[in-house]
Length: 275
Image (cartoon, rainbow, N blue to C red; front, top):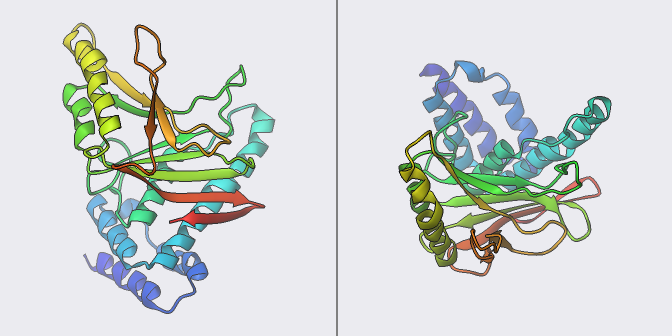
């Protein structure tokens, strides 16, 4: 308990100073590098993160988001590209956790302090990511998607009760610069997405779970807006007779969904235009 109080006090003293927002990441690093995260209980990690996120002002959070994208997207891609040439292994970065970090910085809602099963944010919200970068298959095609997997009926139905759903896409803008966007979806208000999900459960989900032979699981897949365009809608359905009709699901300028974050990497600089 004494250690936790010390961490909170040290961090609080840094954040409350009239710190240059562009300097905040370096200032916090000096304090946080002394924390041995593996020795801190999960609940205490959430407490520390909540304290930090709630104390940071808008400009501090925005500049931390820039630093995160620069370190974990721009620099990581350069480093992995080097090894990819040597090994012919994938240079794709794991965007799942980057998405969760960014959403926490934008919303000031901490995660659960651990990886694995459970809610992505401590308020019960879900974060999904899709990455177009360095994801070509052997045929030169790429088809990232937001996957909502379930191995029980209860998990499948929980989709309709999420506090919020945050959808992150990393792709290219029309000028072929790397772009990161995050949409916040309220599934209780987004009628188009909610109705399609209910249709999908009735037609595919529930029948699969009624087949008790084996271990059934289902996966509701949303395709994000196309890369290198200014599209702002997700897609579901392939139009086949045994599937679902093609549906465009608006993510902006519609009740139940809004764009809450956009960053473009231009000339090795992270430019955030929506935060």
